[in-house]
Image (cartoon, rainbow, N blue to C red; front, side):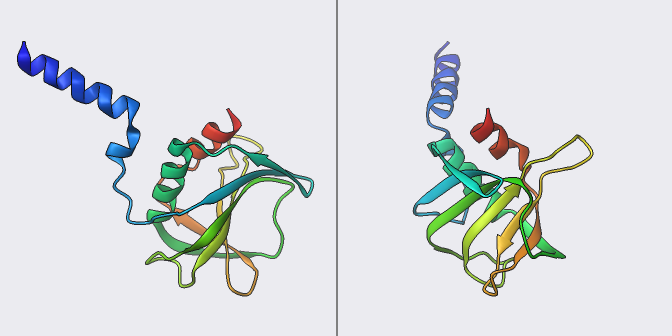
Length: 138
């Protein structure tokens, strides 16, 4: 009985405080999120869960895809970091990143990171981007 109580207590703590599960090496001090549609930015609230998820997305960036985007699509989520973040997979500090919003099931979301030349470059991440989209759009 005592073991069950301890297990349920731990489960409750993890449910109430998801940061206990947070193991990201990337640390974001402060971030602002925007939903951008037709160049119009709408500020979105950032919860601790979204903050942690964004850190984990950046922590799990694996490689650039090689595609450079001179401009962004019509609809996307934009994240502006108050201070630069460095990762092993991105060769420059990260100040801004975008997550494209899929138009259909066949069109997956994409992670775009602005480089020092002000170009948007697509990167792979081992973390699903749908989680952060659902948190902010849901």
